[in-house]
Image 1 (cartoon, rainbow, N blue to C red):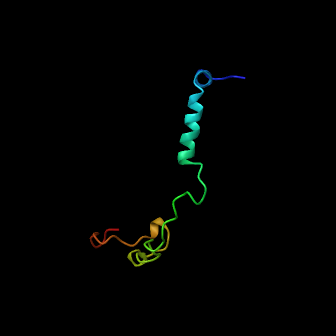
Image 2: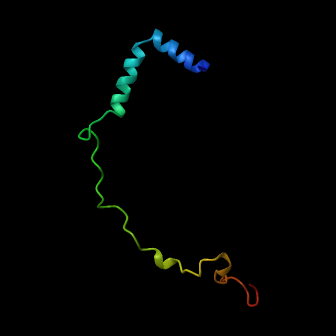
Image 3: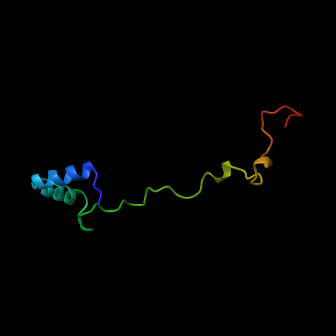
Length: 79
């Protein structure tokens, strides 16, 4: 089975430095291995954005690229 030089180096390094494995376990426990009680509570939804409010700013014009309304800045006769 092929192993890259990096994989070989890491295996050799960890064999020579077993204390690194314990350090990895402690680091993982600090960030990931948590019970639900230890994790931060989920935030309140009291200040969450509400649906709606900006729908009136967009007027549907048919849904096709060629069916958009005429630009307000066009001169008469230009389209």
